[in-house]
Structures are given as C-alpha cells and as structure tokens.
Length: 242
Image 1: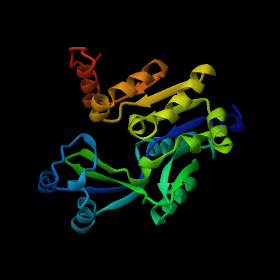
Image 2: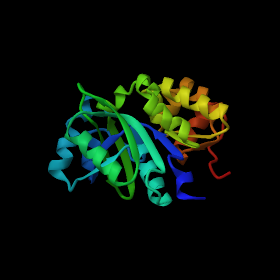
Image 3: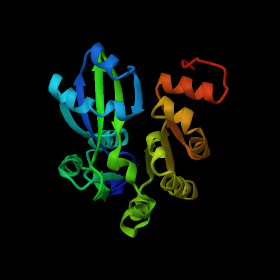
Image 4: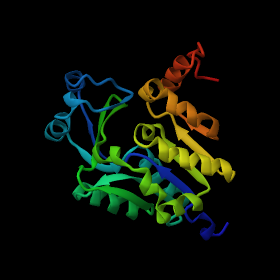
C-alpha cells in the first residue's frame, strides 16, 4: 500500500489528559484510598494528591489519556505522518497547548474541542511494585460536545477512517458521539473497536456499554476488567485463560 492509503486510516476518540506520573509509596496510596491495578474518577478527596505527588516524588508530565496514548503508539508503529486522527476535549490553557504540540509532534492529526471555561484534564498515575493505578480528574475532557463531531471538518475524519478505537471511558462523556461513529462504521463495513477501560465502566455504565457491544469488531480489556464484566453479565466464571 502507498503511504497515501494510510492517510487518516485510524481514528481515536477519548479523554485527553495530562498524565502526572510517579513511583509512589504505600503510605501515599493508603492516604488517598487508592487500590493498585485500578482506574477511577477523582473525587474531592483526591484533588490535593496531584500537587502532593509533584512535591514528594519524581514526577513526569506526559500528554496522554488512555485513547490518545494508544493512538500515539499506533502512529509510531505506522510511521506515516497523519495516518491517525484523534478527537477529545481540552482546555484553552498552557496544558492544552502542550497537549496539542506533543500529539502533533508525534504525527497524530488532532482536532480537539477547546473548552474556554474549564482547565485541561489531568490523570494521576501512581506506580508501585510494577503495578499502576489511574486517578483521572477529567475537567475539560468531560466537556466534549457531539456538535463538535458533527462539524464538516471533524466528521470528515470519521468518513476518512477505516478503523475506530474508543475507550470505554468516553462512554461517561459523550455516548451520542460514540453512537454516530459506531453506526457509520456498521453502515460502511468498517472496523469499530472499544476498550472496557475500567471495572467501574462495566458496573456503572453497563447500559450504555451494552448498546455498543453489537457494533464492536474487537473489544480490549485486562483480567480485572474481564472478571468484572463477567460478574455484571452473570456469566458465573472468573476464568480469563480461554
């Protein structure tokens, strides 16, 4: 295939977050009631942790979010500029500009919705003993509007793509946008994929997740998410080996 055949071939949609990543200690996890190998949305009790992480530990700041990270890796693997596209919501601030610069430098064609009233989202990445836990403060990432997707220049990215990847986290933000993309994929015989993303998505967003299941060509998840999905759907098995 010529490089032009890969133009915009993969589209991702999700919650762009600035990762605040550090190796922490058990005392820190206990203080903020954080369990390893988990992903949760930040509550009020978690909000001070981001500053504390930067004060107590050696912190890395990385333009991320589950879907954007995956798209950046796919872009690196394809080695064709503009082979991947990504949509999500950021704030109009320095973190949003850094996000844009980093993703564009990676070769991803980004079309962010920019919320003028809300800061760019952050995600605490707490690492201990080779395990990690994610605590996401969505902020602007929670403000994506389906109207942005419907704009001709953005919908053109949907039409151009042949593969779609959307994390389950986006079900908490814009299920209407996911519906438009999955229906387009089905109508045009394209490949639609999603990730379970976290146990709480399988539990508390079961209904909107179920609406997506018939459209999914591939579904991704780790063992913890798979076991939760099994329990929620009454499968009565914890076997993740098959």
